[in-house]
Image (cartoon, rainbow, N blue to C red; front, side, top):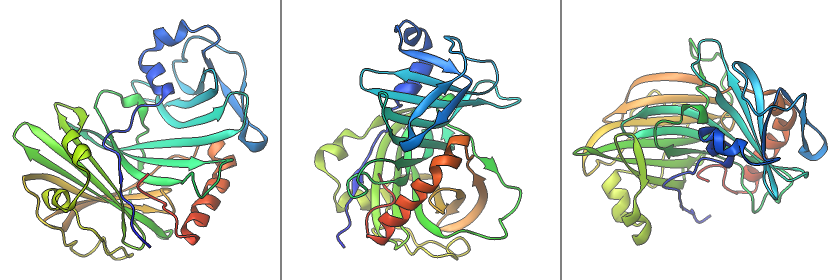
Length: 315
């Protein structure tokens, strides 16, 4: 099968997150945006707000931020845990206005610094053809300063006794060029084939697109510059042995191997130095109430894509 490479230099914050960052402007939209204490997921994933609506976000706990557009309804499941300074987004759901669920986005923060924010993004599609709307687990970037846009996954105290199947891996390389950073992520299927390559420039936490690479297209020179292998040996033991990586053309700030188990239900984040693992941690993303209902369909689509040889990462 021919490997397709997708280039996603910068993932935009969704409508719901923009509204949260500029709440005052959202509140001025008549019949546009409201907070609700609960939400019900009905047949075909139809989303129904439950409880009294409010223009003001709750101070704590779990709640749902509904944004009603002309043709779309976007819902952010927000949670503010004890000790957190502000609420974070556990899940974003997007549906047709008064219609069935179309997709969900789950964003788990992995790294943050002067190079911006690097996170794992899990996309699940519903009520759409699996051949054209891929479920995907991939790496994405955005500028720092939007902590409410992601959840911080729980860090497990120890290695899980039983590991689910390893379904994809991602390689992150942060390269220093003076005061600037090149941030690169490559997503690989469980077969080892490269599926997605994401490039960005960063400075002082602000991430911008690498326009020269986009304009020129991704070619072999880009892989050589950033030290990205075209294939990766993916197996259950890859955490314990060195990973052979090409050198980069620049000062290597850090390199990370991200392993996704069972399509992102469990994540291992391992730092590499000269290809050798030097530190690791196991991350457990949350499972929201609505994910308990719609999650089996998402899992089924992932398995169907894999059996058909369709992408499961990089998008």
